[in-house]
Image 1 (spheres, rainbow, N blue to C red):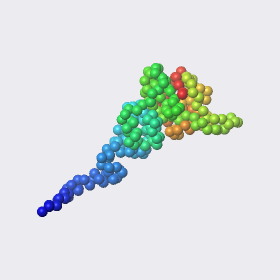
Image 2: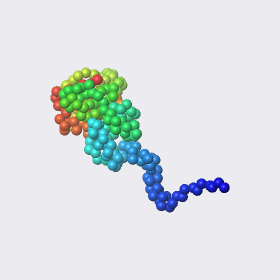
Image 3: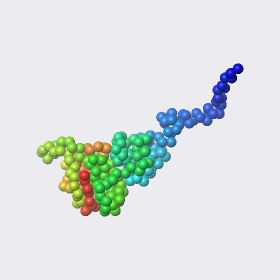
Image 4: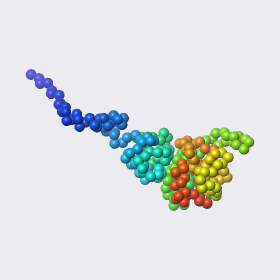
Length: 235
């Protein structure tokens, strides 16, 4: 006589122990195996965000303090990482962004000595170099290439390439210029500057300046980066 296989018995205790794990996974939209690496979005809070912030900062993607809050400053850092890694620039810290960060992805500036700024127009990144070493990688937005009307004629938004030196700092706060408001600008070529702004999208959108977040601009001023004679390489 052939015996039938006896199905495994699932005890009440096993069901009760497994239920919280399954419920938590469903609530996060992940499987139990991937719950330790959740996809993080702007607006999220918690220990996973704090860990991400520490890892970003350790690799030079400045995001302010590791406070566990995925706010605007952290979003700028995620943009910068995604640009450096050649990923979709959506500001969401998912599997590809996490892998790039764990890999230690960092851009390679052209400047190899001294203290300077370098604006990489292709990657839309601004590098802060101290003693020839890359210190910070910041999201920036340079010229959109679009037409705009100013001074009685049509012009094209352009960020000139070249090797410049900062020479003018007309405001310790917001400056109202012909093309808009600039926060703590540092001019390096005629009307072109590195300055803070309220909008720094992950694509070229300015009239020609290199936009940074207000928080990043304050950090640079506090750290002594913005000073006359500071080199600015734009390419």
